[in-house]
Image (cartoon, rainbow, N blue to C red; front, side):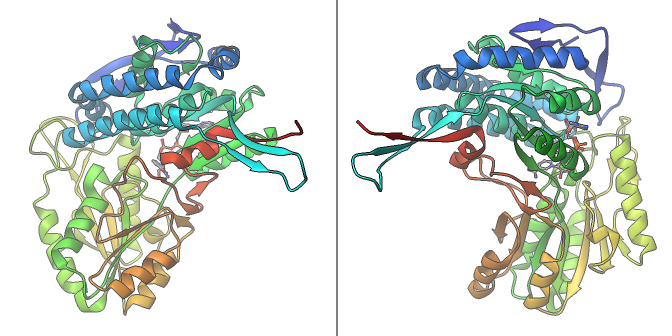
Amino acid sequence: MKPLLIGGEWVDTPQAVSNINPSDVSDIVDRYAQAGISETQSAVDAAAHAFPQWSRTTPQARHDILKATGDEILARKEEIGTLLSREEGKILREGIAETARAAHIFLFFAGEALRVTGDSLASVRPGIGVEVTREPVGVVSIITPWNFPIAIPAWKIAPALCFGNTVVFKPAELVPGCSWIIADILKRNGLPAGVLNLVMGRGSVVGQAMLDDERVDAVTFTGSIETGNRVAEACVRHMRKVQLEMGGKNPLVVLDDADLDVAVECAVDGSFYSTGQRCTASSRLIVTEGIHNRFIEALAERMRGLVVDHALKTETEIGPVVDAAQLEQDRNYIDGARNDGGNIRCGGGVLTRQTDGFFLEPTLITETHPHMRINREEVFGPVASVIRVRGYDEALAVANDTPFGLSAGICTTSLKHASHFKQNAEAGLVMVNLPTAGVDYHVPMGGRKRSSFGPREQGSYAREFFTEVKTAYTRP
Ligand code: NAD
């Protein structure tokens, strides 16, 4: 059993849960300890005690630990990437790439630890100096989803530690493996006791206990809108900082003048890779009528060749969905779209493979309308719907007609339309001739409307959430 990490000690619990491979349910990845309310409170206690000392460590000390952690993750990317693919179902190539990305995030924030700047200004009043400095926030609670088992923990843990905060971290129930490895690497690379505490367990128990604890100064959350709302309410009640990254219903607009091959590749990658289980997945393909039939034909042809199988097989392009509940949810959305008048142009069926896993055919639904449920709610599976529009203006209006605002893409060879779309898409991320999913680790990531709340994550912008600003006036 893999234990919890509290106050620098590995802690076993009476309960443990099995981490099951969605490509093969007979493959138990490992068993993981389960925290309850008292373990969570001990973890917050440890983080609160560790804060005064950790917040005063030198930038060099923080740099060295983050750098050593990034180096070790990078050196072990095949091994950790394989674990990731086993616990989440992402194909091996994607598992290794995500692991390398997590390593680079730690290396980026190792550098950021040396670049914590402030401002020094003259006062508007004579003889007074003004300094604006940044300080750590305190105890940060980190709550993560299952779909990026190492990248999302990395992009929250690395900046939290970089800026001198201490952490109580709760990974998603389905994917504790990569999180346990991060905790182990940080501990072995010299992170002092209590600075990062790992409490695996149920959201309704561990997550809720963190939200209820007065000593938590800030919460950074990625997950569904429903849980995000709950997190936000608790944080407002406690008047603490909160950062939420939630769902998407991301549009990919394909205009008549698009390069057809580019558009098809953007749709295949954005809609179906990582089994469509990305918050930035292209779930609405908004296609102008001049290219509509050619695009559908070419996309369906490409989809028929996609290999869906066990995530660790070298030829696999799309792995399983994450568990039985997600498979059921995906099928309900597909059935619902069919009942609402959509045409299942490609896929839609559950697949049987050598191993007992949750395999779903990538699914393309045509003849849909913006008001259908399939175009309003996040599916979170390898499912894309097509909306036919008359021209660019209608495409933009449909793209923005959603409560979400995470990522928006356009395929076009028109500079005029690309520029207009970049300025007018109501999204935090805009992609031109690129899939809606797939972002760099050194620039901000986040959305608008109901997709996100609070300051941006990643890149140098991460400091807005993980630091407090202080303004000091001095009369010498
Ligand atoms: P989820 O909301 O079910 O769970 C997210 C986390 O919250 C888990 O760790 C869970 O245990 C915890 N949790 C559950 N109940 C809680 C409670 N009462 N109090 C505190 N914590 C609680 O989401 P999920 O199914 O794991 O992830 C999928 C969702 O994540 C999708 O909606 C997806 O779009 C979103 N997501 C968003 C981004 C982004 O950057 N915008 C990135 C990845 C995933």
